[in-house]
Length: 201
Image (cartoon, rainbow, N blue to C red):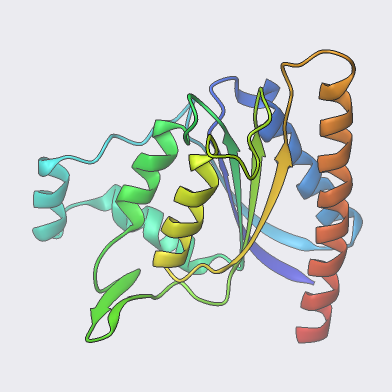
């Protein structure tokens, strides 16, 4: 089983962040299942992407925006995309928003049609590994999930699995239970993913 995998980490705590650790857990399970993964890894905290501005748009128009072109090619080449997404102040890290701004390009990753926008990044599996200090899933405070579903769907990425590790700053063993539950969900999803790729192969 050979997979092209794009792994995006966004935790300001680097490898110590729970979302980053869950990403490593996912990669380990892939390896344990015998996957041969060609991995492109971006840590947007240690190697940030500049925020989108008018100069960026101008360079894209002139065909000189090398970074955005590279980021788009990485997404287009991927079979599987793994997003490590901690919650900061009820939203996604600003570094991830910058990444989305660079890869969302009309005519390349989406297009406008008579019936509305159409995403062009199809046939890819996305895992969102999200970590939160409190408990927000299915609550009005979880603007993060709605944004990600909207943004990913806009680009044509509709096969998305959200794996939540919540209550990490709460006492009473909640942190440990949440991480263990997330790790178990990852193992289940990777088992299913591996079976899917084996059937395709």
